[in-house]
Image (cartoon, rainbow, N blue to C red; front, side, top):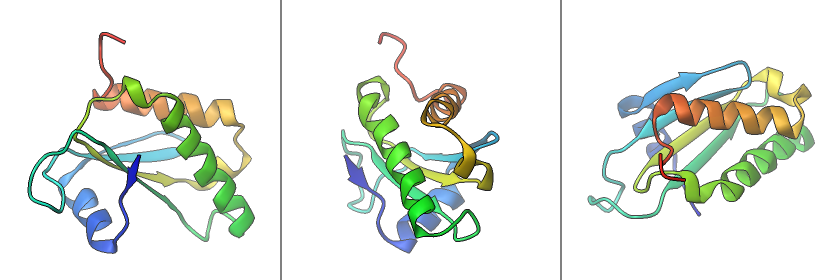
Length: 117
């Protein structure tokens, strides 16, 4: 799994992508060509957790949970997408299963899950 790394990549995803939100997460999906100027088969996932959410331990826990949800369900996603996930403050009290269902429901709403899986 590749990541969105630079501020420019995140900003591009926020600006050109479409957003979907629920109680715990906001998902931005950008199907634009990535920084190399062409589509790749691999998705890139960026995770942003604000300091408003909690201290570094809490923020990192949320980030690990989102990464793990994506890792376990990676085969279900269409390819060639840039995705930015922004955690909301309610995510700090959420269990892993709640984060998982929130992420997958946003992905279904965005239409980025494969139908055949």
